[in-house]
Length: 68
Image (cartoon, rainbow, N blue to C red):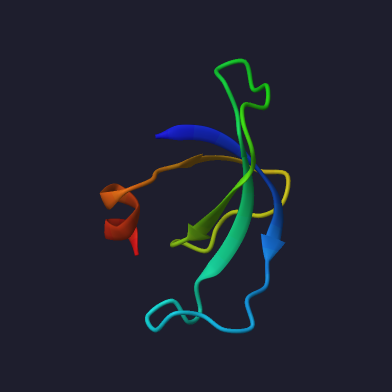
């Protein structure tokens, strides 16, 4: 898991089958001092709870696929 801050949302006009209704967010990865690290990433919000400005944890790889 990695710490990040939601900086915005993404609107997709076409989504891959199975991703309809899933909200996508722009997340800026952060270090342990909440300072930006690297480039922002696009994350799927599988639980529909995060919004711009919120501090979140995100995962990648197989763990991310299991959440959806």
